[in-house]
Amino acid sequence: MSSANPSPSSSAAPSASSLFDPVQLGTLTLANRVVMAPLTRCRAGADGVPGTLLVEHYAQRASAALIITEGVNISPSARGYDLTPGLYTNEQAEGWHRVTEAVHARGGRIFPQLWHVGRISHPDLQPGGALPVAPSSLAAVGATSYTPGGFKPCPTPRALDTDEIPAIVRDYRRAAQRALDAGFDGVEIHAANGYLLEQFLREHSNRRTDRYGGSLEDRARLLLEVAQAVASVCGAGRTGIRLSPVSPVNGSEPDREPLRTYCHVVEQLDALGLAYIHIIEGVTQGSREVPGGFDYAALRNAFHGRYIANNGYDRRLAIEACAQGRADLIAFGRLYIANPDLVERLRADAPLNTPDPSTYFGGGAAGYNDYPDLAGAARSHETAQPD
Ligand SMILES: Cc1cc2nc3c(=O)[nH]c(=O)nc-3n(C[C@H](O)[C@H](O)[C@H](O)COP(=O)(O)O)c2cc1C
Image (cartoon, rainbow, N blue to C red; front, side, top):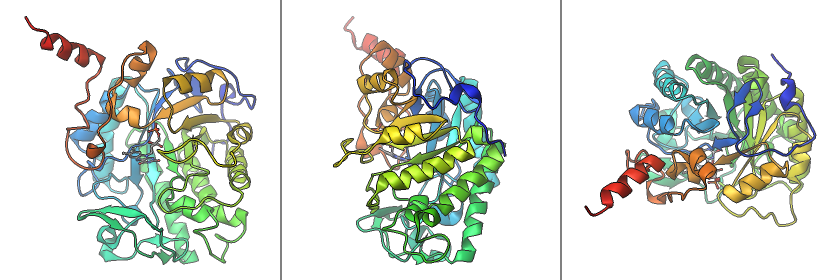
């Protein structure tokens, strides 16, 4: 496994930069620091194959320094949302190959976000109608799964046996290999937002007594085994990971000492030499303010790779965070839903389109591939002029 980052990204001392400056991210040189955040949109086929809608969607956004795709299921039992894409069949990998080719043809870079939802699922989506799996047999209170019959409450899951866990690590490794085969530039591991890896990490959802539960070291074990497995396939310099240290979404409860938890994890990830940590600051899609505070700089300082910041960033906050050296790159979620040419708009300080939440999950091109870029907006403005 390649464990060293190239020297340009190996500065523990955060330095000031412009949002529009190039940056080294692991082994990749990126044109600027504007990242498209992962956004599940439920528009793949029922078989998890990404089709032409996704090809067009990601190609439209290729001017991002890096696109991180929506969550991509690593196995049939990793699924918690209908019509989400996968990377566990050849057909899915072929579909993704069309996506990566289209993005590369426009000069873009793209990583899939490897995903296992754990207990955020429903028997309607599981092979054989089985219960979803999780570290412990504890339901995610208030969480829902997007089934073919609509959103349904997540049931109490089945706790994984210790001897089932190596197969999950293997599924991540295989999905990473398929990602490379499909032409992706690297891989992001989804360890945020209340899904499987976070369920193992957090004390509230993990009551195991084997080597995957109990102490902080044991709760972090699966996440770190997965990171090591993916890095062994992709190279650490092409592997990143997403974390949401204090976010309570999907029935997740933050640890009593979240800084201790996440400093441990980030120190161990640093030892693996990963290209980046991608941090959701505050409550995902909610407040950036953390009652009692959270020292994100401590995570940044514990890690020699890049720090991608996300959650509630607008142009001003993003420029400030880079200029003050608080972040190396900024990931934008909802702004990317509605603004395919977000980089150009931010650079020009141009007006932004507003996303329509009613089109977030499921549907076709409407609210997905029909948001105008600046040129399109100018064209429609011209045609609207009386002659
Ligand atoms: C429709 C929608 C789908 C999302 N899907 C994912 C996902 O698949 N993986 C993930 O890590 N986060 C997901 N998120 C969270 C976003 O990546 C991001 O963290 C959040 O929107 C906050 O960033 P923003 O303020 O720039 O939108 C999703 C958010 C939205 C609005």
